[in-house]
Image (cartoon, rainbow, N blue to C red; front, side, top):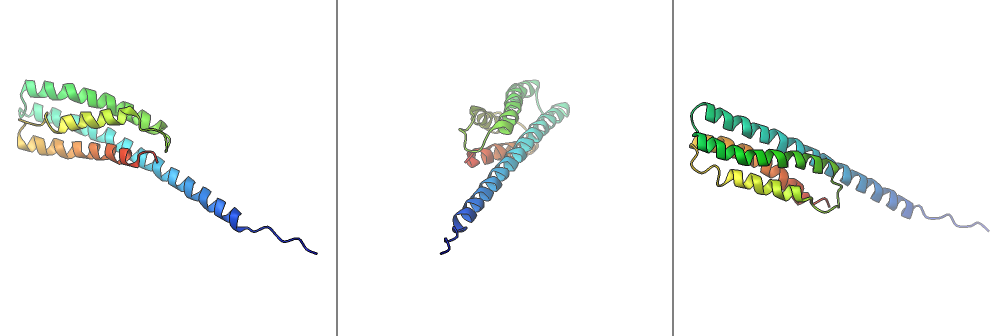
Length: 144
C-alpha cells in the first residue's frame, strides 16, 4: 500500500505569501526612498528660490530673515526625515520627525508666504507642495 503524497498546495500558498510580502516591503522601501529624495530636493529648491527672490529685491530683509528662520528648521527636520525614513521599517510606528516636518512645511506654505509677491508665492508654494506631498505619501503608507 502506498502512502499518499503530501499536498503541495499549502507549500505553494506559503511561497506565494512570502513573495507577496517581500514585494510589498520592497515597494514600501522604494516609496520611502523616493519620498526622501523628493523632500531633500524640494527643500534645497525652496532655499534657492527664496534666496533668488531676495537677491532680486522682491523680499524685504525682514521677510527674508523670517522665512529663513523657519527654513532652517525645515532643513534640519528634512535631514532627520531622510535618516528616519532610511531606517524606518514597514509596520513600525510613525516616527515623530515626519509629523514635525509636515508641520514645518505647512507653516512655511501658509503663514510665511503671506505678504510675499504673488510670483514668489507661486514658485515657493509649488516646491513646498512637492515636499509636503512626499511627507504625506510616507505618512499615508504608514509603514503598513
